Length: 93
Image 1 (cartoon, rainbow, N blue to C red):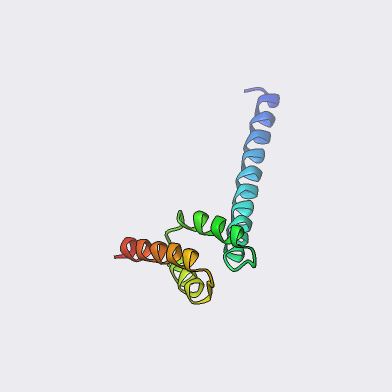
Image 2 (cartoon, one colour):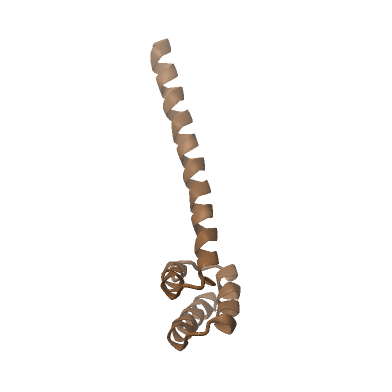
């Protein structure tokens, strides 16, 4: 193996590691953003956050959704939240 090939491989592995860490950090930031938007003053943002949270299947989401149901003023969004809570509870069982 030539020295140039080894440095190219190291560069690729380093770039891949930076990409993975960067992607993970962006995903965590997006997750936090969507959880905040669940309590937004704008209904369309709450709808989007509910849609995103439907893909989340962890105990923290269930707790968050129970808080959301107590807070949500719109009956249609509260009903959608209830369906999501029921799905989360069924998945946890």
